[in-house]
Length: 128
View (spheres, rainbow, N blue to C red):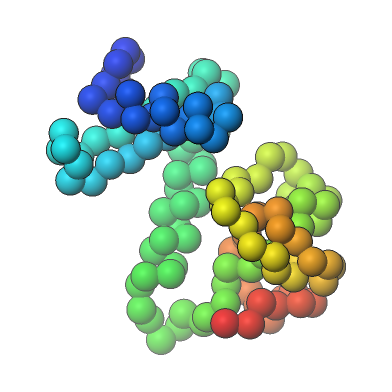
């Protein structure tokens, strides 16, 4: 990965400022300057990036690939307390969450955290 300013760094700087974030990734497809991406992160944060991107790609693929084996509802909301207790670490959150029911404890949550899990294995699966 190249170091230094890239063609989409200005847009990423604005997005980070708007979000009040210190780390971010911006991917652009067919933009004004073609396709590309920008990353602003410390070396320590970069170490987590491949896993986050793999998880995101898996989620996109699972939601878009139609197979007979695919079952709906594998993306389930989870509250921050249950996430910490079950997985630990810092979760990836959606930017504009809406109230939902945590799939593990049943409490209302607007934490914007989702996990990929078989809905048959949780106490409070989200209905489609």
